[in-house]
Image 1 (tube, each protein chain N blue to C red):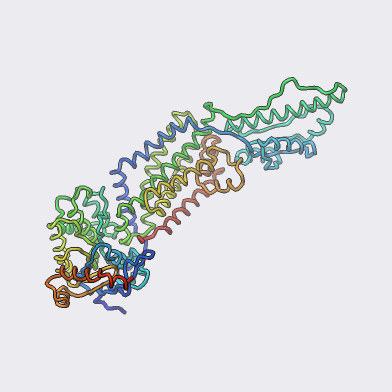
Image 2 (cartoon, rainbow over the protein chains, first blue to last red):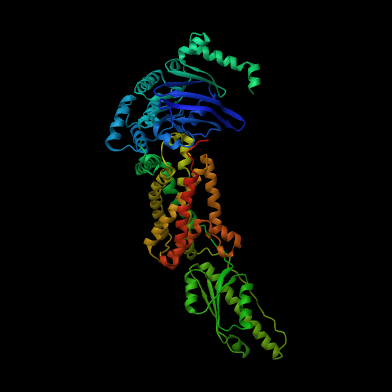
Length: 254
Length: 384
């Protein structure tokens, strides 16, 4: 039926907004337990790709599966198995840390002792202890993102999808964040994460560069460094962007 | 796999949404102020401001004579444009029923010997029954009927005199009158119940019009739509908390209407409250539908007003629906407030029971189910 070792796969995924092609023929495969990093400048199509995989947007062309479920037809089933966090804080500002967690526990059908235990576990995991009764509105950026991560994990998803989770977050929160991501990956949870930060990308199992909606290169950080013969991902990123922006190339692309 | 809870309706999710919504309302004083202060301000303000003008009253005629002279009389009533001859009535029972049901506001009874009495020059006694619930309508109906009959009597008298050879006689004074403006306290009895309905519609529709769209604007909707939540759970779960607030607000306005403006409720208060609850749910559902289809709070606001304005003018709140062109009447029939006004005026003024209000109750219930259904179907768990 399906390859049980694959968490997410998509082929020829395309999304057009009018004449603008936000995502252009992207095909990727993410094995289970893998941390896959999406790299690319702002507006390159990372978020749109992620949203299509979560069932938030309908692809114009192409298809994708998450845990073997089709992202178009089975979007509602997929939603039981994924945790999602968007780059913009999307929890309730006027609710406390605890109330936000309670709400999402209820939404995922978790109640009673199980919900209570899970909540305690997540508060500890995200280092939110002592802030349970604080309104989400009063949390600083880094703390908000930790809370958002906790809410995305409340139902113990098999796949975690994070859209620039650490954009504008303080270094300590970033550290906590990535510690959590690595520990989850060790437990066999698959993670798709988009980022700007090269040090973060460096720790991913596999990375893909997206630019102008196209997937330019894909591979492990080590593979890419060898292929381009460059010392780090930052150099590769700049090399690729400059190469893409050469006038001649852009014309034949358009 | 965890198939059971996967696609079906979940009471746990539904409860979580209600609880979250209540927490949000409690921490948002401005929205509570809208629900409580606005209705009271409105009833005080508009309670003194609403007036009405009357024509084209539905008239029933019990013509026992069925002669050319009786038909001519009816035609003269119709020609005034104050009366529309809609129902032919046989018997007092039918007549009473037509007035009770509000099908006719005026009933004319012509005795069997009408033409004979006229021909023989004797006094013919006509009877006119008027629905007096709305004093403006009643007064207009009465005054115009009296005027018409007086003129008719005078012209018959003059013809008689001419026949007797007294030559053309001229009337020393003539007067043609029409009630235009009636701002006295009695018109409140008619206007306050309708005002309660209008205020409740506006406040409740606006309350829910923002609930979903606010989540879209703040981005919380994006997080919510990646969860397994069902549109039914979300929409009904968001509606339920506002029923309580709406009812509280309704009771405040009702008390103001009764105690401050001194408008008595002739019928059952319990029936009034139960049917008002039904109407509140209908208008809350309209708000939710507006919230479902709009993308921004501004759009929701515009749509709310696009809905409120026609409902003020077409529901029979200011102008009697009977005097509107047919097409406009049909449009009014698509507005829930139209039926709630019938209910309010029926219970407040006529003291009617549920028996006479079944049609309105059923129509409002259908509206509620239909609007909720459209909102649920229109709700997309997508952001593109």
